[in-house]
Image (cartoon, rainbow, N blue to C red):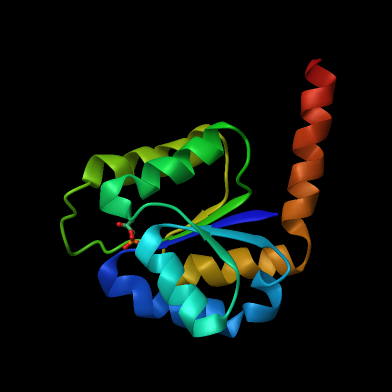
Length: 139
Ligand SMILES: O=C(CO)COP(=O)(O)O
């Protein structure tokens, strides 16, 4: 599965810690990230991460484009709710696209734990099979 990893600056340590803790699971998937987040994760874990532009320079939109093309299966986006971001419209757009396409989105450590455990149990594969069946039914 394709997984997006994104964190605002004050949340990057949390996301690095999270990915490190669940590295055996993340290592089974294709990882994508905004520029600085991806660099931090690959340096800390050695995992292969496809890096897009930094968030403020269009990285959020690049991940959004993957969602719009049905190429992203889950998004871990540790947002900083206490700091205003210069690219707030991009952040909102990315979250919105997750809702448009029903992509599982975890925006903090609590929901991330539940999402990764769901992935571990194969719940996302199950969801994708259902999605494919619905698409086939609609054809
Ligand atoms: O700003 C971001 C998400 O909105 C993250 O971008 P970086 O990973 O490049 O810091």
